Length: 144
Image 1 (spheres, rainbow, N blue to C red):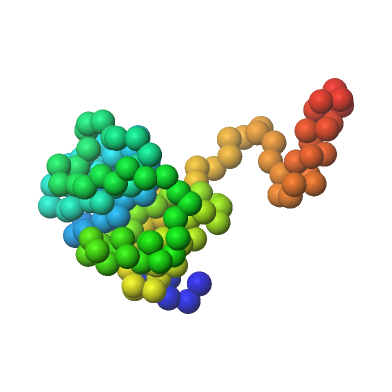
Image 2 (cartoon, one colour):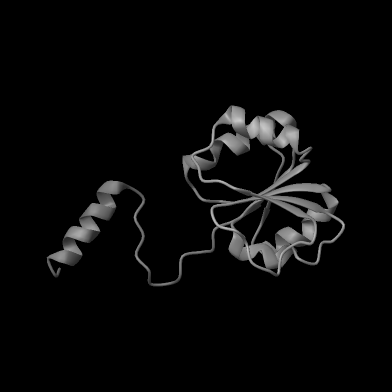
């Protein structure tokens, strides 16, 4: 989308590698379980939003916001501004729930490090539409 400054990476470790070149104050929205990938980045400050408190290892300089979505565009704008965030790190969830933070980052001109979804393992069935998924489920349930 016009105005996006996205930096796609394949893993949290790769996100941690590129992050220092993009900003100093990161809004990390990748979940509390992956914070260890950023624990060595002591020169950066992190804003971490999580449903549950994270356990170590995690970045030494961080603020944790315990919160659960859905989040609004106005709320995401305020969060980025109030914490002087200059880079967003997120996972490609493929859903609309992340839209407000991505829009707020775009409006603020922030770079966004996007951790891509891993490829689907070979042999795992996929469906492009709900109709295809239903056909697969129906076929599986009937033993076809």
